[in-house]
Image 1 (spheres, rainbow, N blue to C red):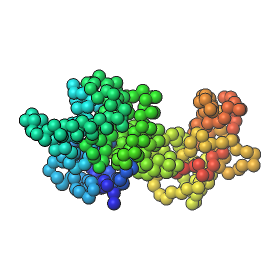
Image 2 (cartoon, protein in one colour):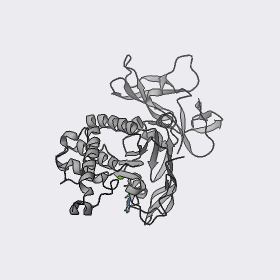
Image 3 (tube, rainbow, N blue to C red):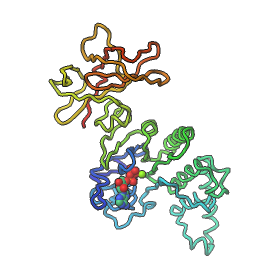
Image 4 (cartoon, rainbow, N blue to C red):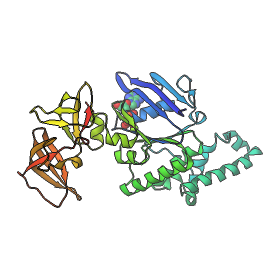
Length: 363
Ligand code: ADP
Ligand code: MG
């Protein structure tokens, strides 16, 4: 059974449909990525999962328990912990105390217990300290347990936030852009670290980002959002190989979109009659054929199918390859080719678009 089951989730703010028909099933122990440009509804989904917003429609079930029907969701008790897009720490409290706050619920600690110094207080305090230090060790923050939270560097504040969220012992951890605003190097090392911790602790995680590489590199499964709607929900490998829509394709680096019409199954033509065989096939609706710049090759003389003639325009150097803009009957195509041979502006090329690399996407 799925740990989290979301069906037909939607919310409107006045006339704006911020999230619509959002559906995911989330299995225990996996890391799920939620990706989409700014304003596509990612944070709003988190706000609905945590009871900040009441959905206009839909069902949210965590471990079989309905969360939408409840008057208020106490997210800690429901078993959800989250971090926020903008860091929210108790900045004037110590690193240790920030994590301990996450433990209060589990240890049934109340302010009263603390103020009255009830006998059970000391024991509880000791246990919470131990537990918090354990977590800080995992995040390599134990040396800084006494620091004020606000005195930690930004990256460590991000870690502390996650440590505090984990202290609540959640069934589901929601991370909202936890790596944004980090410099590139730290981003890279932190994302590996998050993945390692997630696997080690077996914590089911939903990870929001707008960075494609980051999302695809660590997620077991990814939901790509656009305008409040999930355009594709699949493994990173499947999305990468077979983006379902033009939006998703653009998001993951497809740049060439050809207007084609279906002539027969697995056979598509440009308006000038140039025909392309494709390994995949689509029925009905509006679509385009797309191919990555890396997947276009030069046609050998013996090739006659899936060939397009074109004239070289602008050339840019990408390190491992050159990228050429090539003017063809299908418009300007971007083509990456090795550096052994350099073409110059005006050169005529015969391009080969392999049928298994030519992907049909919905528009
Ligand atoms: P993301 O996190 O993907 O960048 P958000 O979920 O924050 O996007 O926002 C999705 C859309 O919902 C945006 O157009 C945003 O302006 C709108 N929105 C979010 N919260 C509210 C709100 N409380 N009132 C009105 N509009 C909102
Ligand atoms: Mg957001």
